[in-house]
Image (cartoon, rainbow, N blue to C red; front, side, top):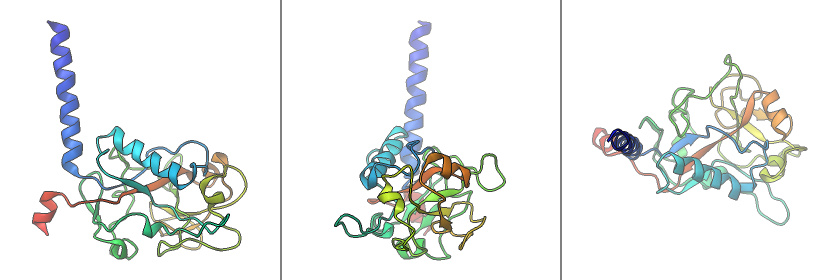
Amino acid sequence: MKKTLTLVAALAALGAASATAQDSNMSFFITSAGPGDGANLGGLAGADQHCEDLAYAVGFGDLTWRAYLSTVSMGGQAAVDARDRIGDGPWYNHAGELIARDVDELHSDAANLTKESILTEQGSVVNGRGDSPNMHDILTGSNLDGTAVTAEDHDACSNWTSNGEGSAQVGHHDRQGGGQNPTSWNSAHGSRGCSQENLQGTGGNGFFYCFAVNAHAPVNALREE
């Protein structure tokens, strides 16, 4: 009898967690963990799959997820702009807070992108400048407007397949630090290298942003607007 009650309680808790996840309609998050191989994400396909896997694990597997990553022209393949990969919006974080209504707002000062609003798929805040360890360098390979960085010394870490030589543009999710654009969430400066050690050494951990391309607004948010 005791085992039966324990099982029922566990199933009820799992159902409640699933309901909470589905009710929040999350369509944007920062990864709670990277693949662990520096900027070698398995290319765009591997990064997208990582977004899908993290989202599925917390009850959001019904959405199509894409990594906010740009690539450079390489091997006969045209460059890809992160802004063109993520759908039309609107996007909401784990807490149901509006991040941006569309792509243009996302890349403007009107976007709700702060350390406190850029939550993981689990609803947690990621360490930033002043925390130990600092993990505010977020992989993007992008300019401020979400297009691919094409400078000679940037190759998006061989289009997200290198864990050694190369460099990729990173943003600061906490909107502070150093670099050419220290307060930018998507284009603060270039990485020192592409290995996990180099990413961690300059304040990162191989994290990146994930967006649902078939995003939809929560019912309560629609009513408020």
